[in-house]
Image (cartoon, rainbow, N blue to C red; front, side, top):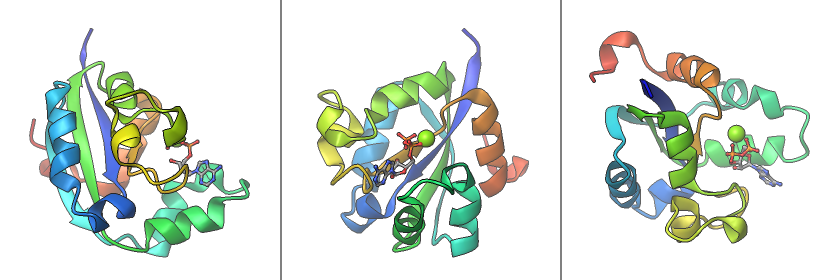
Length: 140
Ligand code: ADP
Ligand code: MG
């Protein structure tokens, strides 16, 4: 299995509760390396672009409002099978369905305020990384 990169966001509900370090510890414990990371306050435009795929969903407005409600930490994670591995570490979108020990089971507040984002495929990971990082900000 080749070394791969995925894109992660530590969402506002988690940064507000000072959980950046706790979440990073779970990421690193799973064998993923944080090869880029910055704390930003997303603009509405950035959040709308990032979640454009969900534009038609009933929760889109609520999701964008949430993502710009407080700072987030955007990250690039690297490791073997990083995309799928991070989805496993995150747990299911709805924390009530997330497996024991996952970030969302441990920390998420609800299906909307669910602490983390992780790319769903290698192709989307490349696009999401490019939205927030330039090449020289990623140091593997
Ligand atoms: P995931 O983040 O697990 O890939 P999705 O891509 O389906 O999940 O949804 C993107 C984000 O939209 C979720 O992480 C969550 O913050 C929000 N969301 C998804 N479903 C709902 C819902 N039914 N109600 C409110 N927010 C939702
Ligand atoms: Mg998704």
